[in-house]
Structure formats: structure tokens, C-alpha cells
Length: 481
Image 1 (cartoon, helix red, strand yellow):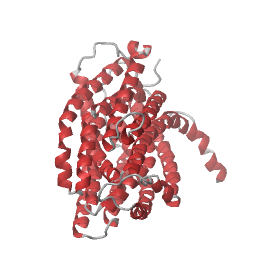
Image 2: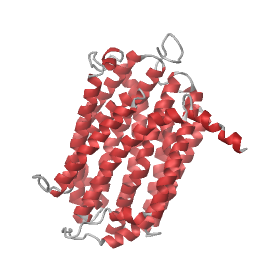
Image 3: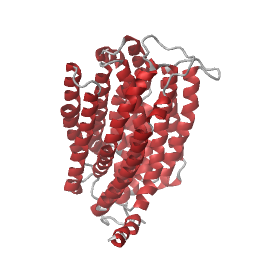
Image 4: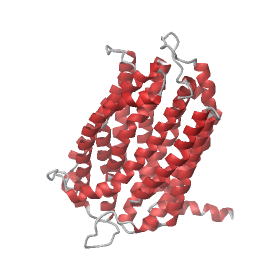
């Protein structure tokens, strides 16, 4: 039996959808998402050392801002689905028009986000957070949302490369953005190297500047590529193409709504925890920041699943799509096991990174870090518990998205976010039942519900019959010349 089991490994490693291909595409995306994680994590470490109130404000405000930005990013990310399916169907001349519709959509999104930036004050007044946190939350939200168009545009531009399975450029650009963001954060938060000390406002400015720089890098790589200009018609007049734009919106709007609902659920969760007190809010926000070390790299694998499933559907080879998804799921679970063990065995050193530096002034109402740390150890155990379940949910979500099954994902997210997370957590918090454990148990149940629904949907095979791109005369698929 041992020999039979080991013989499967060479088969799983080689060929379309094997571990080798999954890692070739997914590993750079894991590093890319890891660089984004590093930017967020460093932001919050710096803010935690500047003021406990600023770290308490940064996560709810950041999530609330991303609630709006994420909707548009979810739509723009579906450019990769179109690119992958057109590439798989050997229709390179349709790749450029697909990208340009993502660019036009991003410009419209930037204008809408600029108007939404003024909603921060009313949102955090309604949340009922402590007074010293509200102004900080509104400021952070305003700057991030005002500059959110850069994040949407960078998503559309990176989707060109990821859809073509060229994930190394995506990795290099994101690493460059992370490298530039960290010194900007340090200078603008603490007032170093001649910059003003802006605290949480400076952290937001640094994030927006980093996103703008990433957009410039992607544009330069695309416009300088001979293949992009000649085969993919990037140099053609970049006008809106209604049919292609509608195709993007048909699969992208449900994906955007799903993204919105997922972030809305986390936003509501964070706001509800804030009603329990500053210690609970700060500990939850730190736990979420550490949790990003787990799930954002797995989102890189999820994007790889979308790319491989999209290409396979363009080739009319759903068997390869299923094989790739299974292999990526195993890689995801291996990563989650490793990081979850760290959270259980070494929570203290991770939490200590967020302790306010000795000698720095604290704001009125800042809680003692020792209390935050004690609660953070408990919350990291919850993170370790649901990490494996989250790995299943994230990978199957990516596979369904690559096949264009975004409407089911949207409806599932709506039902689970309202019925499993927000309403039960609200009832428990308002009744004073269970303390900090009640909302965190609801969060774990929410992630488990999504994992079960997405896994059953993919295994059911409905996605095999979904058509995303238009039919064209010629070969039904295969290897492109």
C-alpha cells in the first residue's frame, strides 16, 4: 500500500493542473499577497507602537474603506477570468479589449469612491465606538477611500499578467510596492527624515502612494511588451467596447457583491466587537492583523485556481480544472497547518510586536497592553481553529470564480453573512451573552458554512456547463501556436 500511495506523487506533480504548474503560477502570487500582507502588517505594527487608539481605529476603518473598494476590486479581478479563458481558447486578439474594459471600469470606480469617502463620519458615529477612536477612524477611512481607485486599477492591470499565467511580474511589482511603502509609513507616521508626524493619517497616505506607484509599474510593463502590443492589441484605440464590458460585468458584478458582502460581514463583526470595549476591540484588530499572515498568501493560491480553471474551461477541459483545484487545495491546507501551529505555540512574540514603544505618549483612554495581550492569546487560538476551514473556502471560491459561477458565490455569501454571522453575533453582543467568545464562535461558524457550500457546489459540477466567453469558429481548444 505504501508503494501505491507514493506512486501518486509523480503523477500529481507533472502535467496540466499538477503541483508543478500550480506552484509555478501560485507561488509568485503567494509572495505577491505576502508582500501586501507585509505592508498591512507593518502599518499596524507602526501604528500600535505609536498609539493603542490608532491601532484600534485602523482595522475597523481599513475594513470599512475596503468594504467599498473591495466591491470594485472584485469586479476588476474578473479581467483575469476573461484573459485566461480567451488565452485558453487561442484567441489572443481578445485579450487586449478585455483588459481595456477593466481600465475603463476602474476609472469610473475611482470617481464613485471619491464621493463615498465622506461617509466615514456617519458610519463610525453609528458604530458607537469610544469618542477618542471615532475621529481617527473617519480620517483613515477618508484618505484610503479617496485614493481607492488606484487599488482597483492595479487589480485590473495585474489581472492581465495573472490571466496569462505570468505571475512573476505581478510578484515583482508588488514586492517593489511593499518595499517603498514601508519607509513611507515609517516617515509619515513617526515624522522621520524631515516628514511631519501624521500618525494614522500618514499611514493612509503611504498606502495610497504605494498603490499609485504599483499602477505605474504595471502600465510600464504592459506598454513596453511587444506581445501586448502586437498579439493582444493593447496598442489599439482604448475605447469602451459595450459587449466586452457587459461580459465583464456579468461575471464581475456578482463577484464584486460577494467581495462586498464578505467585507461587510467582517466590518459588522468588527463594529459589534467594538461595543464590548477597547480591550476587546484592540485585541480583535491585532488578531485580524496577524491572521492576514495566514489567509492572504492562500488568496494567492485561490487566484491560481481561478487562472487554471479559467484556462481549462477555455480549452473545454474541465477534467484539468478539477485536477488543478484538488492539488491547490492540498497546498493550501499544508500552509494553513504550518501557520496555525505558530499561532498556537508562539502567540506571545507575535502579539508583542504591537506593544506601544516605551516613552511614547498614549492617548486618553488607551487600554493597558497587558490586558490586550492576554485576550489576544485566546483569540489567536480561534484563528488557528478556523484557518484550515478557511483554506477550503478560499480555494473553492477561486475555482468557482474561474469557471464564472460567481452568482452562486454571491447568494451563498449573502445568506451566510446575515444568517450565520451578523444577526447571531448582534443578538449575543446586545444580550451580553458569552463575552468575546460569542462573536468569535459566530465567525468560525460563518467560515465553516462557506467552506461546506463552496466545496459541495464545486464537487456537484454545475460550473462545467457555464459559458463565459463567446463561441468562435475554429479549434475547440488545445495548445495555442
